Image (cartoon, rainbow, N blue to C red; front, side, top):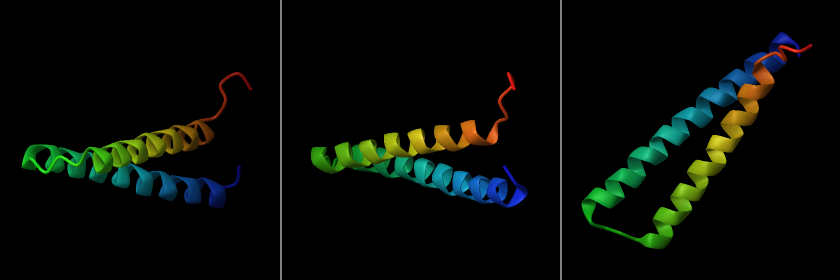
Length: 68
């Protein structure tokens, strides 16, 4: 993996982590405000899980294989 690809993945990783944290805040605000829209909360949580998977994939690409 070259430096350009590493830099691109690192930037994408940072963006995904920010979005993941933002979703956490939004979900918590909906729950605490009493505006419980179950469908919306489920969709937000699903998106949050997708982001977590994307984050894990990128992190595994950035961490070199120790067995190599």
